[in-house]
Image (cartoon, rainbow, N blue to C red; front, side, top):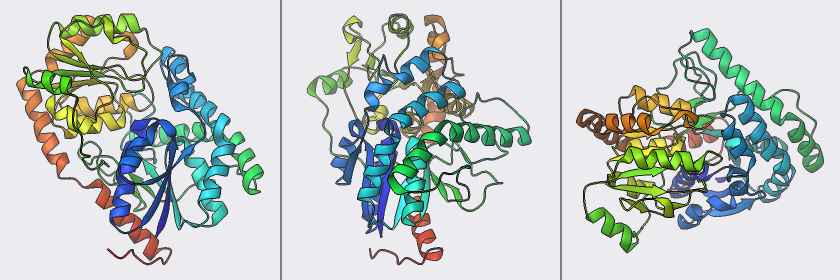
Length: 419
């Protein structure tokens, strides 16, 4: 079978989907992958056919981008909806055109993130099946509130309502532009309501989120999706640093930006308190030359290779980083910025492998030092190691591939690929 996989976001949004693409290829299917150009190196390394979508995610997320301005305001769900809708407003027509042109021979579309409504529209236009791919659970349930809201303890009916409310907010933020693109590119009628009742697969560990009892069969927690280990050799300076002493603390916030860099960096330096540490500046704009000698600065380094060689990971709580640190068997210290990061920060804390999170606007050296002390406890490291060993036995990619094949054959009558 021939599959088109579509997403738009940072590498944390794309890398797990590349793992799923590789799994589909290994199962004998054909796959093409659409994503932001800054995230496509891993797809190329995995031998996956890829296409760059219009837009520049790094410019949008960078220190002066729309999402960075969101960070400065605290990152609540209404601001998030406006920020991601702005990205879609600028690119939706081109995304629709690019994907429609390249997808004529596909048997199904798999979509994720802010490109979801484009994926659904193209699948509807081509009359082919569509599968949602999620890195955090957005399908309505009574088990927990929407991951885009603070992780409050609420009764089941209110949890369910929160999902419907957040999903409706996202739809209304995107609706005008997606309907313009539908008319302009595909000659489709406008939609007044969001799509419902399509299968959604979640690349989420069942050790962090259990399958909600009130979900239908078409919504599935598969286990996390990881890219198979690529052959990667560290720079000599990094290898020498790792060999020179005890496992260091890793500090990195990926694509996060738009915060008070000087204050943030000062808090990190004081809280680390001379211990060996690795620092990744990412898209933050932090100047690493200001770091003292106990820090070693790293560039883009595969997390699956690096994290098992650390003592703990201080990060922003993105779904990909949270899962990779957990699977590596090391504790986390989470400083969330926006979106679903608070959800994952809460989940890691509830497993006992991370301290209670502190919002990035409220972090200081004293609070961060206390969080590091918690993560350094032997019993915390033991829980993290046990969780990592359990997660290593999951095969979320195989689960997702099986479900996709099963749905395609039993519902739509497609033959399985020959293996």
